[in-house]
Image (cartoon, rainbow, N blue to C red):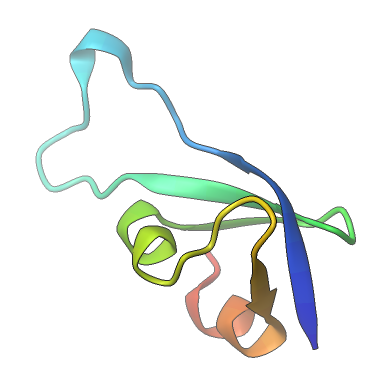
Amino acid sequence: MKHRITDLFEPDNGCEGFMPGEEPTATLVLDDGRHIRVYDRLAYDKNWDVGGEISDEDIEKYGR
């Protein structure tokens, strides 16, 4: 089953930035109300953006 992404949040780490070795994440808000955290780069590579879709299989595989 596929779910529509209704919103997306990316943390703003301000002037401190990210810790060495820390990989930025994004939170996808789905049409069923779930919030799925994924690596930011992965979301970009897979075109997971507002209005896009993500499958149950990808949520299971990549969700954190």
